Length: 476
Ligand code: 4AD
Ligand code: MG
Image 1 (cartoon, rainbow, N blue to C red):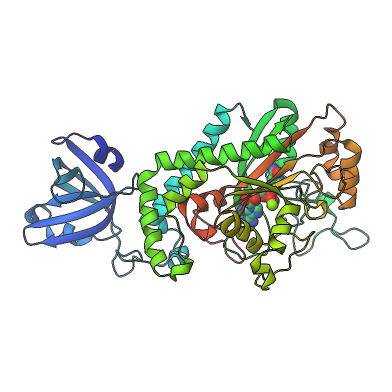
Image 2: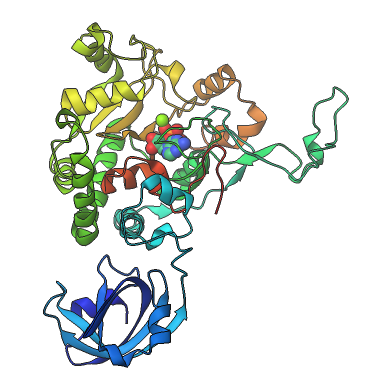
């Protein structure tokens, strides 16, 4: 039986076997306490043994990090803070963990240190809580879309096109890097490569997602996404997971409503289904807050913050209106933004966070960005200068969602793709959807790790994915 089930429902007096990793051991003259965790739940089960029952040799092997199986009788617990505890009959040691070498001792470890031992950090309370919440959110996402008539579409990971046109791709090739076949002009001859052309890891499943939406009406993708942007920030990974719904017949307004309803649903799911883990993380954050200056402390506790998002309507305004707010802000007038603010700029994280955290104090959906700072596939507004884009901005995170209504007019799309230097022969199939039964449609992409960051309150994206990939780091 898993510890979660034992603590919740196993009958007092029943004989059970518990298997897990030792968190702590306390040897007292007339009793031995061992706390075991198996990752099924944040709580440990307390194992109680009479000193004579475990022989000296075995007792020595039971140290923090060792793995054991305990059989015994479940008793009502007086002191452990749990409903029940396990009275030992026999103990078997599966694997020892030399206390001289095992890095996870029962004390506070820094998140930086834990990143260096990512192979062991899932055994800490913090990371097991995050991983369980991560799972619950993934499950909620599939639930949401399934309940709302969306089909899960598996889009390719290896692709020949740059969906976002940002050129931040990882090449996929089987050519010998020391002596690749060359064309007459000295460039590499990719015709001889595995796929007979240049290929990369995908930066987005959107283009193929659109093909699905033009047949199934409502689809979503949920898969690994790769970006070789050399931005070593707390919000960027080289390998992350993205969810991309795409819906036929949706216009920008429908897309915004979907983004709001969807994010509220999955956050509510976490509040309702991950209460113990969230309470643990909330306490952890409270301790961390105490080390900050009073004015830098957050006004809301973690769960209050999640409820606040779920209970309030997101603010919706255009990029142009947002620039006006930023330009007339005290912070801008005092020259306190690091980056310049004027119409046409790509908003920096400091600008997004000012709008969300200082000005509106709510999630914000910004729309109708200048076309020059957005991808080629976004539908042009009537004025010809802005596009039907939307970014959803969250407190503490900044951009969590990017999306748009898509350009469904063949000529306009072709012109935009040419203007940004995308070759027709890499996306001819995408362009054809605008020639065969085109329709208005919209979609968005949400970074799964940014969502997990928001829900867990973690401030570094490396701490919400089991094994992060970032510049100069691909261990484990
Ligand atoms: O805004 P982005 O680049 O949009 C797209 O890729 C569109 N094709 C989505 C669509 O319309 N179907 O990325 C979407 C989201 C961002 O808002 C962010 O949350 C996340 O993906 N994201 C990253 N997350 C972690 N690390 C990175 N390097 C990320 N880049 C984007
Ligand atoms: Mg974006």
